[in-house]
Length: 300
Ligand SMILES: NC(=O)c1ccc[n+]([C@@H]2O[C@H](COP(=O)([O-])OP(=O)(O)OC[C@H]3O[C@@H](n4cnc5c(N)ncnc54)[C@H](OP(=O)(O)O)[C@@H]3O)[C@@H](O)[C@H]2O)c1
Image (tube, rainbow, N blue to C red; front, side, top):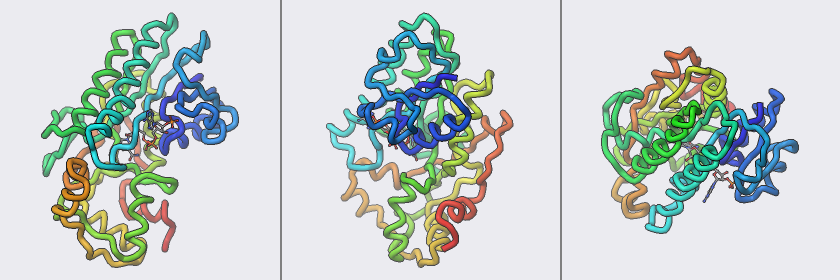
């Protein structure tokens, strides 16, 4: 199969490339730095700067993951525009390009996040749930999904991957949490009651591959392990895997001052359930947080 990826140089994208290269697929990655693609994604992966650079070559599947990092810095007006443009404007360009193609791909797998639901509090969220509260992150995900969904009118199967917190050994949130936790200065955020829907990177790759290969999969899928944990339990488990204490809470008020609106992302959460994936027959390898962390961090 020829697969086109946006965001192929990112945390999830690089692992997908490795996985699909090993299966013998042909890969093209749209990137702001196309010359870097072969180094980051694999020697045989072609980097392109514009969708039209594909030319007349047939594409079987598109995976759309590009987007500026959402939790890296405060959501100033300028940052919000970048977060929006890097997802919604890029996805609009993708759909416009798809419209022009004579031979369409079979499937578009497009990124989203459990943040689509907003802060869900104690509510259990399957894919039938509606957004509980709207903040910038949920509006961003709603618009991202709606834009990608337009490709259905072109006869393309559209899958929306509402990803939770991806736990990986090569980057992402876990690697940023490690320094304070290793120093024994980690702890819960705010009151620590908020739910954290996590997913091991291996399961994230496997579920995207699963959704790509199932001809009847379409619409939204919660991509998170079936056992979300509260933030304070996440902190306790991470500290315990590292053999460190975890009693230093990060007060909500300090976060609000430091991060402004972005603090919503850390102080809120989603008790999301991957019902549709499980109903479709997908089996998570990692359902226990401790086992997932031990797998990624080794037994410290
Ligand atoms: N990792 C998670 O825990 C998680 C959770 C929920 C949702 N997601 C979403 O899933 C997607 C993939 O996640 P990831 O962790 O693999 O992301 P990532 O490592 O941050 O990579 C995203 C890719 O997006 C592209 N990008 C970055 N800034 C951009 C900009 N300003 N304009 C256009 N493209 C830009 C980059 O590709 P180039 O540099 O090659 O252009 C980058 O490799 C993201 O959109 C993310 O929001 C991730």
